[in-house]
Image (cartoon, rainbow, N blue to C red; front, side, top):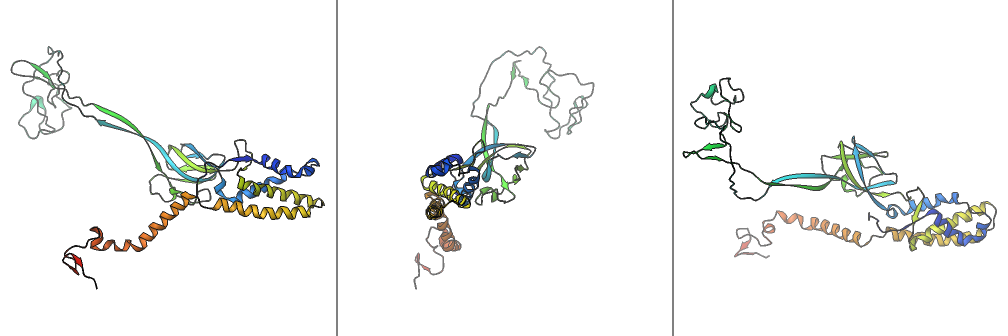
Length: 349
């Protein structure tokens, strides 16, 4: 189905006004009842099918796994989940040396660096009653003296003294950047009812997130989400008024259908309009055929897609079977050790 973004529309009242012009005498005598003609325009809309419906789009906010569909929703074209993903990643950086004052008055050397019994393997030590080769470093005996900030009995302190009494502090700062990407992925529709287009891609996608349409609601396994949908909307405006296409090749079909019903109503009121009705019905038959031919004729994009589909089908039918042959994978040149290959060429019989 070709999505319709460019077709213009007019209201039902404008359609009736166009038909009244040709029946001015009956209009002046109030023989034309507008309410009796609404079902005629609805029947013509249904006869021309989904292709005359306007393609619309909206963003649904899922709460508690469901949301109400738009009031003008008719058929779903496709649905996508809108989401953001945040990525933290380091950036290229070098070594930076900075001199800054360090308060070493409170630093109390504890002798050799304390070896981490959790990661440094077997050692012969029992510092402050800490058992070796265990991960019980968090439970220190009361006899252990307190350490300065940044020091630990389980990890080598960052602050170190050399033989000259100089103090160094090694700090590694890894700079990074945070990027937020917008992404969209399709939902899998688990049912296929009349409110879903036959070529909807969500019917054939494989994904853990799924959805279904029931009544006027859109359900999904996601608790909260933003769902973008493209759909064919009902032929009505924001105020609920009936709409019909406004196209030179379609207007006559609608107008002659309205005129036919007006004349039928006049015949029911014993008005002698049989000859006029015969003329209108002949014109209606021609206009209906032309309108259906225009609406249901594939456009260039659809014909191109059909051509590619047919080409792929023929390729799979006539060429796919030869992929198992050794020379197919080698760019069409058979290997030297292949049977019937003499001096690099195939024997021909």
